[in-house]
Image (cartoon, rainbow, N blue to C red; front, side, top):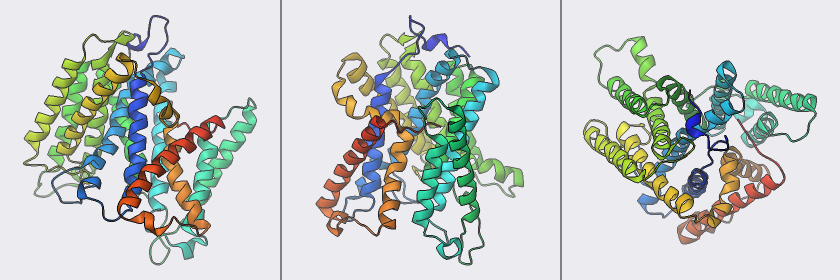
Length: 401
């Protein structure tokens, strides 16, 4: 793996503020649309498209934007770790543990949403969730004190707590079901895509043409395993079960390829916008060509949805890069940077607030659940969460997988 492509003349890793801005805006919009999902009376284009409907709205692009940014960050993050001396197994241990951490978060959070049996657990799901988040913070917090034994003790205590909570969990009408991946959750899906995209990045040698072929291979994977098979074998079903992850990985790899389009040899490429526009056009054309066979569906993770979303992300990042890094319009990014630097904490904070309020029998006024008051509240709440994260950053609370 060649890291020189992402080193500047002072041998430091290239820092792209537009990526932080894009990540921060994505997080802000995510909180907004998640809050808006509980508000009645909103027009259809402000909510996710229902299952079985051929189409997408702007909320359906939020998750792909996360995947795209994860992909954009892979070459830079890998180069940073290599520049710090990581290589071989040490580098890939980081990749594996990071992916595993996202899977753990995903499984726990999904089981807190549905299927639980509070009577069999002996506690409310909200208390169980708060204990999970407390243990997760202990495991993945960035500690500032130098006593490594204390840090290790806190992390081990957090791990023990997670194991205990997994054993305590009960689901199903009779309480016989254990903690299991009903589905992987948003963080879990990001974890799988990150793992596969990092492996693909390594296997392709970071060569743009090879990355493009890997994107096509992911799309082909979905298409092959979502055709009707007369008598599908167990192996066919197993491989087909990863077809959704294949599309998610394709989106992340589009982010990887976007990084190679915009940056090279530790500095921005000259005039990358024509190549970016061509890349977006090719993605959109491929999505259009596949749509008659595989309709646009976020829930089914179809290639037409993924490719259209990736094309949108390429154009959005190009605009962000032009504005922030080339035109130096950066002051407004300061509000977004704390959340962009602490995305995991920002993602889970609304869930922590909800679980805490439910435990304390608190709720927001009912007028905020419908119409214009609800729309305004969704906007304000997203800004409040972003401000809270900025405050937590100042208190040195940061999570890092």
